[in-house]
Length: 115
Image 1 (tube, one colour):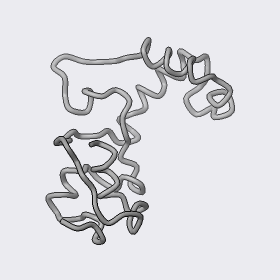
Image 2 (spheres, rainbow, N blue to C red; image 1 turned 60 degrees about the vertical axis):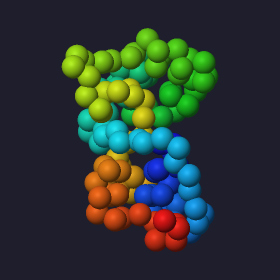
Image 3 (spheres, rainbow, N blue to C red; image 1 turned 45 degrees about the vertical axis):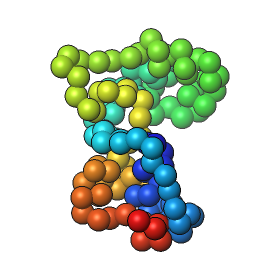
Image 4 (cartoon, rainbow, N blue to C red; image 1 turned 90 degrees about the horizontal axis):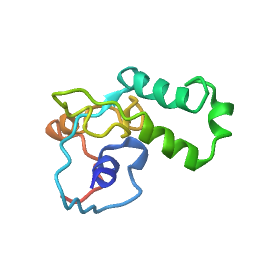
């Protein structure tokens, strides 16, 4: 449901489909790139890479990355909706321009999708 919801909002998905089915409510708040740095730094460090060292990160196997994500799980109590999923889509201003629920409230859904 999360991916379907984001495709209905993402400008880069506009025109790719005309209908979508979300079978559950996804009202999570996603992090911005800045808010995500601690997560990126933690996982990259567990992989013995700097978080912005793309060649080092690309040299890792998917198994190494998944294991680092498991070991690097960071959570604070009480849990907020930005911590619920430690590895989730990031609001980058381009692919995901804003918080999804804000875009829905403002009616900023891809116009080619039947309602």
